[in-house]
Amino acid sequence: MSVNKPAALQGGEFLLRSCSADEIFIPEEKSEEQQMIYDMARAFALNEIMPLHARIEQQESGLSERLLEQAGALGLLGASVPEQYGGFGKDFVTTTFMTEAFGFVGSMAVTILAHNGIGMLPILYYGTEQQKRKYLPRMVTGELKAAYCLTEPGSGSDALGARSTATRSLDGSYFLLNGQKMWITNGGFADVFIVFAKVDGKDFTAFIVEANTEGVVRGAEEKKMGIKGSSTRQIFFQDVKVPAKNVLGPIGKGHLIAFNVLNMGRHRLAAAAVSSAKWLTELSVQYACQRHQFQQPICNFGAIQHKLAQQAILTWVNESAVYRAAFDIERKKQQLLAEQRPYPEALMGAAEEYAIECALLKVTASEMLDYVVDECVQIHGGMGFSEEAVPARAYRDARINRIFEGTNEINRLLSIDMLLKRALKGRIDLMTPAMAIQKELMELPALSASESDHPYGLELQQVQNMKKAFLLVAGSAALRLREQLEQEQEIVMCCADILATIYLAESALLRLQKLQQSALPVAVQEDIVRVFLNDALDQIAIWGRNAIEAFAEGDEQKLLQLGLRRFTRAEGFNRKAARRRIAARLIADMGYRL
Image (tube, rainbow, N blue to C red; front, side, top):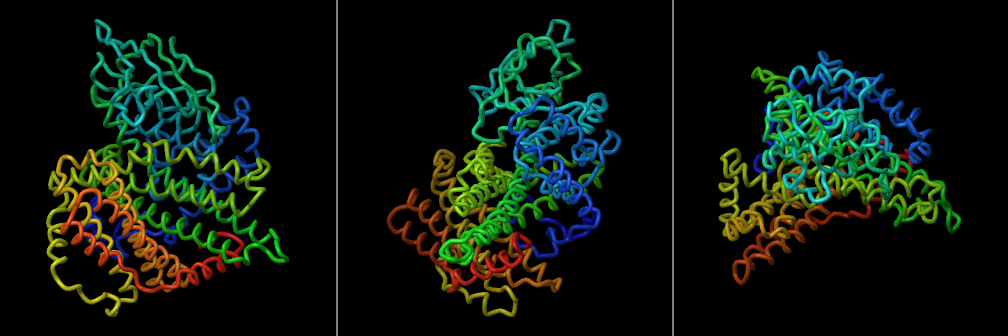
């Protein structure tokens, strides 16, 4: 795809510098090829996976493996893998569309994404040429199934606390691997494991371990709350002899592999969550139109319309941010390739550049999906609580998204930590705008941008004010607490929520601007953006107030609260009427067609 657009913002720079609609990608720009690939993946999900869902949930022997091989035959497993290794070398936006196409199928989506994401990407990113040629072509077809072994009973979010060990042989030709891994997706049938262990008890390192190696033992299938159709097991390694040629990446650099692969995984998870949210919103609309109470369909009631509209608002806004980030990652990859970087290094470097955005999207999309599926259950009423209908299963499946790929708590903390570290390294300038906010508090408020000639002047000003609110709160907290800020997780979490909301708000507004410029009908999208912005200002005021009260007192607290009120003031806007208009569009379309 073409990436000939203005230079992208650096990762995290959205907080400090505005960009124009021309700088982003929106899903409405999908090319013919991307549409064709999306339709092919969607057809596979609807025609091959969904009819077998009950059998998948029962973990029928060999079924998931067969479906993986079918996915491989269609090219769904190797879209991002270069052609020289049997893949198709598609760009990151195209693979995001592909993920969205099948991301709603629950357990099988988890199985596929674990295989072609955290299972394959470590080899693509860090493998030697020999390793890539040996494993990737057969992983692309699904002949070899992959799994990722990082978590242990005593180390989850704290990956470096792993106790698995790899002892080097005297002649250096192999390592003896010992340890226990848990919650391993695809663990019941994987042929290849990416395993993390400490060489000589200290150097955290990744290894490629073939499942048929003596000493590899699979535990029993875990009995899980949701995603019951995905295989999840403990894997035990008992004096497993791993050839030295199967060390993945440099010894002692396993943390780079673990964390960089997770950046991509978080974005994929967000795309899959958007997919599920669209599907569940559609189910909600259709049921609300079919279910009658008090001599009329329940979709006629304002309380139900509020739920339907909110489902659509959160889905559309998160979708906007997912594709904005996908394009930024692709554009950065192309820039690095132009600098003669190897393909894996370029893709990995692009994901690292936007690690903050990926962490934020993982949080917002997973929590968005939890809202959407919860309201889907509620709209279905008693049927929503019955295992005979879809919502109950979807409700259980969705809950894992806030836990894996790094818990949402960890991702919130990481986003602020990465932002501050980039500021300390001079990659972005946080202090200058933060000090400017302090100065602005002493001045009279500027005229509202709604008085300008810009069609979305008020909305642009609202987004800018959100950024000022973050700089006010986070900048003051950082100046007051300094190195102690890291220990004040409640404050950091509030700041992360504000930062994530800013990214969503700006992404949605930029998408709206681009749609308006293309002369497409935007009435419903305008309602979506305006409702979201006004809700966001209210929520940022709460998060900001909670943070300020946690670190400031007396006159300082009063001044900060005064500034926060200025920056989070919302204009009068009838959100009820806007939500009813959004719901009316959904009902007219009998689903999500935004």
